[in-house]
Length: 136
Image 1 (cartoon, helix red, strand yellow):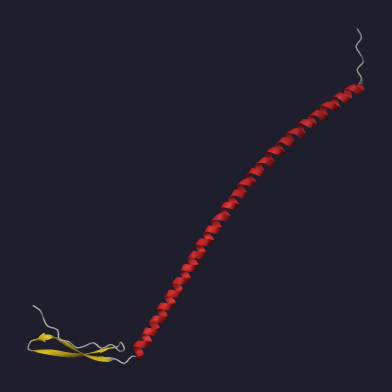
Image 2 (cartoon, one colour):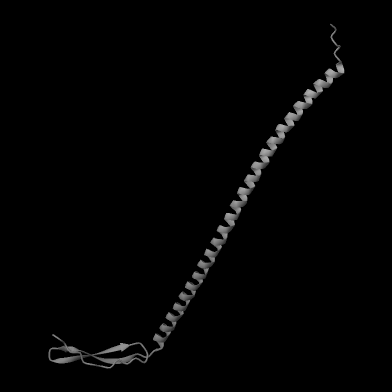
């Protein structure tokens, strides 16, 4: 039996075909890895987008809270200012007022009532004098 002669061109093409198949397999593996990496990155991006949205919502809520607190603080500062002005006005009225002299009677101790004069610094307030009696 005669063996057919091996064709060197056919052998070379077979070797080249094996190399190309390895290259295609390697490229396919790289493509799969890249696809997996891409999917992972897309998931990370979606997660980051969710986190960003949550942070935006928290920032909005915090901003509302800050605005409410600032408004409350402004109201309190206005109240303090108003109270200080009112206090100053009262002090000025008190300084400018002429004291009224009122005759007050103390209860009877012993045989006769004791009279005492008191100064009142509120303007235009008159306290009628009256006699107090001791009950007992």
